[in-house]
Structure formats: C-alpha cells, structure tokens
Image 1 (cartoon, rainbow, N blue to C red):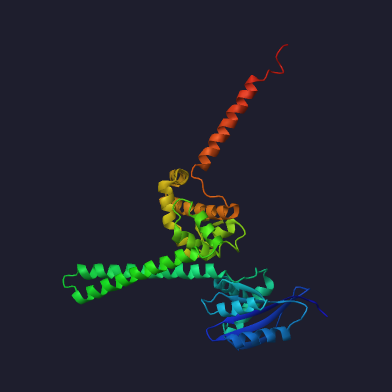
Image 2: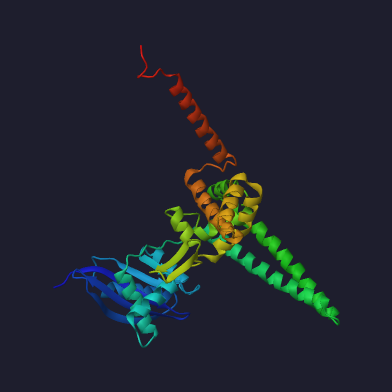
Length: 363
C-alpha cells in the first residue's frame, strides 16, 4: 500500500458556493484526486467543509487548504480556517490561470477549477497564510478607500471644468458638482484623520511609521500605505521579495540573437504599494543629495527620466525595509560621510607606508 506524503484541499471560491476537491501526493510522487463536494460560502459551510475534509483524509497528516485570492469572497473562509488552526495557502489567480493552461483542459467548470487548484497545491511548495494584524488591516482599508475617493474627486473636477468651459453650461449642474467636490474633500480629511489616529494607536506602529518618515519624501500617507499593504513587513523575508511583491522587479526576455526584449518592470504585484512610491521618489530626487546623484547617474547612462524615477522608487522601498530591520533612522549624509571616512583611512594608511623604512634600503 502506498504511503501518503501530502494532503491538499483545493477550493474554488464563489460568492455563495465553495467547490472543493481533495487530493494527495503519494511517496511514489503520484497525484491522486479522490473526493469532491460543494458547500455554502457561510460559517456553517466552513464548519462542514473542515469536518468533511478531516473525515476523508488521513488523520496523521495535516490538510493544506488552497484557494485563489478572489476579491473578498475568500477572506471569511481564510480567517475561519486560520482561527481553527488549519494550514491555509492563498494563491494569486494569475498563477492558477497559467497553471491551468499546462493541463490542457477542454472544459472549465467549478469542479475542474477546484481540481486544478488542488493539483497546484499538491505539486508546489506553498507558503502558509497568516491573518494580518487588525491595525494594518484597517490601515490598508483606509488607504485604499482614500485612493478611490481621490480618483473620484479628480473625475468630478474634470467634469466641473468641462461644464464651466461649455458655451451653455448648466448652473444647477455646476452647483451640484461643487457640492460633491466639497463633500469629497471633507471625507478625505476624515480618512486622513483616521489614518493618523490609527498609526498612533499602538506604540510599535507609531514608532515604525516615525522611522519610515525619516526618509526624504516619505510622509504619513506613504508610511501608512506601505505598512498596511505589507502587514508591517511581517511576511517579508528580504528586500528582493518586497520589490517583487510591489511589481518593481525587472523582467527580461532573450532567445538567441533575434529575440531581445527591452528590460522593464513586471508590474505583477501590489499596485497600491507601487503607486504610493511615485511622488516620494520625485521628492527624494529633488531634496536629498544621495538620491539626486543616483538619479543623475542613471539618466546620464540611458537618458530616460521615468526609468530612473522607477529605480529610485525601488531604492526607497528597499531602504524602508532596511530601516525596519535595523531600527536605525535615515541619515541624509550617511553615504557622503562613509565615503569621506574611507578616503581618510586610505590617506592615513598611505602616510603610514611612506613613514615606514623600506626593508630593501641599506642599513
């Protein structure tokens, strides 16, 4: 009898239904899909799902529950499973979509989708998901709400401009548009106040946001966005992973001598995090000598200012993670002082060599 090496429950999440497939990996590396069932996307359904999975699986091995990040419909299930002590993995839908293409499925249904997710979980080594801190979860919600509100206000302002520029603009329409803009301004101020209050609600969060704001160009909103989107850097292992999570990593494609794609950022990451770094990067280039020099060197190399600005964004994000790991605030003249110190050490060493009598000289 074959021994079981791994057990996975692949879950296709919809608004009202959970379609589940159970699979396992044997010690002979064979993937077996052996059970299917549907449950309602509710608390009762979650409880029934866990009981069914445990009943159909080997008790000596844990069951890993794998699902896609489908908007917000998967969150209630993920929180329930995590609070129950189950192992949960949440996968980006794009990864599942690319994986499904390799299976050459001719029919795509909820059942086949759950089977594909189950196979993906069985074949791949996935990281466990942990619920974010309540403070950082609220920060993420507030910063995203503010961004949507600002986008809406911009659209209304454009509409107001167009209405006022018309030859026969409606006075009542202009009045309503101005009222909407005033309301959106008030709501934006309320959200900003809530963000400030939330950042100060915990000593650790307050200290971390203060630390990040020592970087030129990084203000309260940027610090709140970065902390909210990364769960306070809790799940980030290194700066390279953080850059990839933000979609600021570089992708290239080369094949022989005929295929040579120009390197560009992948943008396959958190767009909120990426967008929050745009204006801080421009401010850093304008006000900080180190970033100004870094930007100038890149522009002189390839002549593309936007490409250099993206590199500054990536550098800012890496710097934030460094400050988080070290707990040391940013020092504006750190690099200049370091170079000066290295030059002075070189001069001192050269002077010592000159003063020392040569071993080859005559006595």
